[in-house]
Length: 154
Image 1: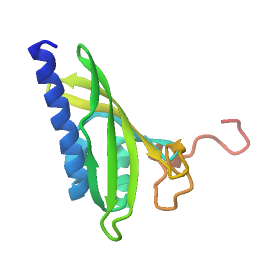
Image 2: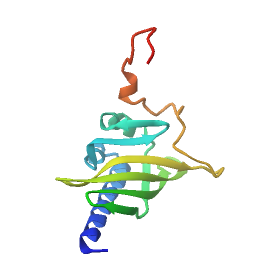
Image 3: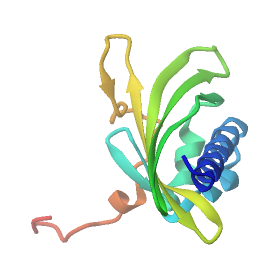
């Protein structure tokens, strides 16, 4: 690995550390800052744009977002990665286990997340993106807007 790749990987690792710290500290502005303007987060059978993040973070349980070192593959000014997560709920110390699957892009401001997708690891051995019926999760704004006139096909 050449030195520029090492610098890129360290920068992406720091970006992801800022995300985990911001989620733990419930700092929505810092969460938004790690994404590109067109960035998205996918979980619960939905994909959320940045405009949805304040409601999504507010609905998320509060606690510790403990992440492991990501496995990153660089492709010039883009990259992809997988990062394990152990979330510990602040109120009862229950845990949620899983991993993020990410894409990253180099911007004039440095590396940023373009997409982040959550996969939960279940006690049954199943892997999924979460429960679409979770009553706390907000509906993405793009779905909340009227999409068609009554009686028309969408």
